[in-house]
Each structure stands twice: as structure tokens, then as C-alpha cells.
Image (cartoon, rainbow, N blue to C red; front, side, top):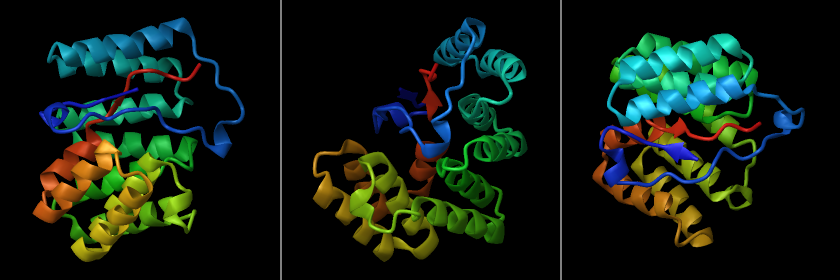
Length: 208
């Protein structure tokens, strides 16, 4: 389950875990301690203490550095603290461990854009588009992945392409709340919303 912060909660409820990917066919066994540390990090965020959250998630990463979702949470907490360089490294590590984790490249694009590194951002958006676009027909994707692909196309190619893509998603999944919200924000060109949507998600449940 995914949790979002920084005002995003009032705008959009993120639901569901990451879908199982081919590289996850080999089970990764988590210790109870790692799961506990992840939960303590989330509790610290709920208490508006991101520094403590970082302490807990960093300990979890040290205990199990090969589990990609811990790096995703680590990255999201670093973003919350404004530590963008560290967030970029954590997203890169998550992508190295889980090659089908396309969100990481998209998040890196938003961070690069925030740091006014336009050309670097374009490269990350292209990387994300290639990752999501491994399935050429958007109708074959689950609603979450299809929505992320539409957002990537918006960032890479512009508003017209993005709206065309999100309309395809809504044709397939007309009641999907994320897609409805994304379309509205695309029309408003609300890039701050997209930054939060992409980087402020936290995995509240780890696959054991």
C-alpha cells in the first residue's frame, strides 16, 4: 500500500502495491526487524518527523541492502527532506535491483527538473518512457502503470500527447481516480503536483 505526504493526500489517494514483475519471481525473504524498521519510518513520517524516519529507513537499508523497495522508501524520505542528491542515488539503486521499476527514472526526471537540469531531466523522462513503453499497447497495462506511462509522455512530449494518453487510460479504466486527477492536472499544467505524485509515495507494506 502506498502513502503520500506534503498535502498530496488531500488531492489524491494512492492505492495498491507495485505489481509483481518478472524479476521478482525469486522470493526475497525479509526479516521481521526490517519490516519493523520500515513501519517505524512510516510512523515517524506520520508524526511529521522525517529526520527520525530517515534514521529508521537507513537502518533498514543497511540490514537488507538488496531489497529494492527499501531504497524506494529511502528516496521518498530524502525528497521530503530536500536531500535530492541522496534521493537520486536511492532511486538509481532501486532501479539497479529491480530493472522493471520505471517510476524511479520518472522521479529522477522530476528531481532533475526541480534542480533546473533540463537536459538531464529529458534523459530520465526518455528512460522512463522506454521502460513503461516496453508494452507498446497502453491498453495491456494495469491502470497504475498506464497512468504513469501517460504522465511520462506528458513530461517528455507535452500536453497534447499526455492528454491523448491519459484519455486512453480513462477509456479503459473510466473510474480510476489517479487517472482522473492526472488528467485535470495535465490541463492545468500543474508540474508541482506531478513532482509530489511521483516522489512522495511510500510503500507501507513490503512483500515478504
